[in-house]
Length: 312
Image 1 (cartoon, rainbow, N blue to C red):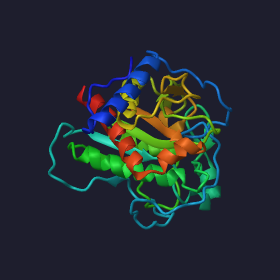
Image 2: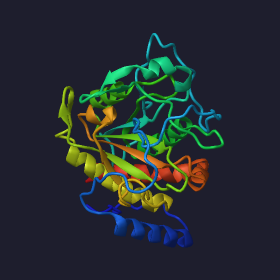
Image 3: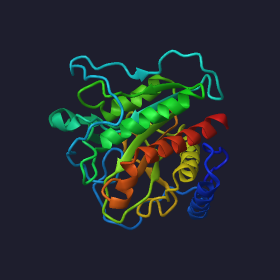
């Protein structure tokens, strides 16, 4: 299915609209229906949960959004639910789980996040530190900021929003727990927010879709198709909102990639995708990812895609 651009993003000045429509046209041309291909060019890296780049211990910068103080590891908190509200809108009655990738304090708990967990078909690390820009802006800070913005946009449309964590625990949650949170919420859609850590020159975003996996606790047979629909709509509307092109190194310029090695997808029983919003190790992409204005556009694109999927 080509990029779905049926939901208009927030109105913008005419000059900016022409730029975004041109970017959307480029995205539509390069999208191949039904794709889920492997990596294209660029340096290969060891796969990690939520991205193709290598994990590195980030030099943390202050988060652009306020966060709650950490709680003790002995009593992991419940997922962060939306505050009670009376907002009604097109997404009333829908539950969306947002999964901010990694945790800003994972690097302080390498032993805990390094323990192996069952992802259905194999065992992988509980979590990783994620990556960072050369200037030290951590992926985990980026994912929390975008997730907060995304939550506000979805709540304004009437959705109940659950975060897998909200900077309220010292590390994690582990990838298997992240999947369970979406499952237990009976989510209509789950999006895991990430940024990649690849080679300089590798640019653009991509949405990761679950492969057909059956093994152990993993069975994605019921979510493969709806997850592809969710991911395709997010990809198309992310182009429109941000003007960013699909990845030039993953997914053969389609903006979509299919993987079977991610526990967050393998163990999900509800429609779920990951989005790698850009490459933190490329200076041009890093300039976007560190911009608060661009992060708002990224959140808008993801929100537009989720809304388009849930409204049918």
